[in-house]
Amino acid sequence: MNPLASAARIARFTAVMYKPHYLLYGVLWVLALEGTASLVTQPESTWRPTGATLVRIVVVAFVLLYLRMVDEQKDLEYDRVHNPGRPLVTGAVSAVELRVAMGLIALGAVAGSLALSVGSAVMIAVAMAYGLILWGLEWLFARVRTNIMVNLFVTYPVQLLVTGYVVVSAIDTGEVRAQWQAAAVAGVFAGAFLQFEFARKTSRERRPEELLYSNALGAKGSTAASLLCAVAAVLCDIALIRPWQYSSLLAWLPVPLLLIPAFGALKFLRGDRADYPPLPAVVFILALYLTLIGQALTLP
Image (cartoon, rainbow, N blue to C red; front, side, top):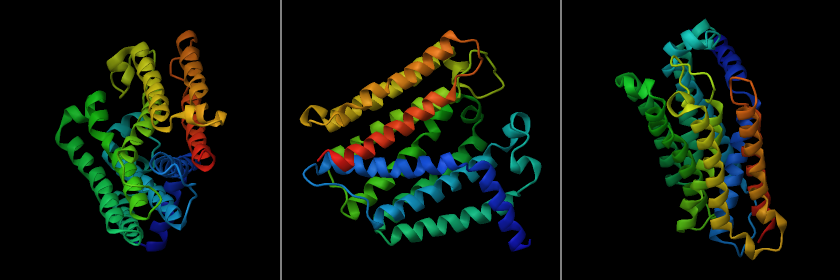
């Protein structure tokens, strides 16, 4: 195996499967999460990103790529039918090359996190290990592979573990205080992510051969689940931030942001397109994270 050729193939894989908006999501996720946790645990001081914040951003960005590589391999049989253009299916990259890249990413992520704290290194190692456990669970149990709701229940904790990494690391490096509110912030980000997750796998057409939430919940049920997750994210933010304490309208901005997923739901239910429009769900999550960053920077 030629190392330079393999590196080029991994670079092409990254360009195809790790689009710029994934990186943008990772950056905003870390900033919004750390900033919000700081705001709700030590509101008397002003949060500002630090060098440790930058390390966490880099680690999370690479770990998201690592998890993308895991998905590429564990979804291979499904992709051969439904996504025949994926790099692993076409042979543009090999499983061995992906695994070598995953090993290098894992070493870098743990080493970078260890520079911050032992807790940081442990948390990111657990998150990456859980990604491999998911691969094993889907291989061992057909129900995990084929039942979309079971799959969600089993796979979503990897997002919680990455959230936990950011919070634990920020506590260790002093940006966040160790209080229950720091853990509760996870509710905001769980709701925001899950509203997008339900939206992107919703269709008015029943397609049993595809993993769609609408297959299990129906189009209206899946749409309602997406909207409820968005509402839950905003309510959690309100409960933690307590916007009535501030004179700035920015404290209340997450509430009108709910109009974005509501518009997406209305467009889907009243329109004639088969699949749920993904753009409103994407705009909501990005707008919410930008708002949370703004709150953390300006509200104290």
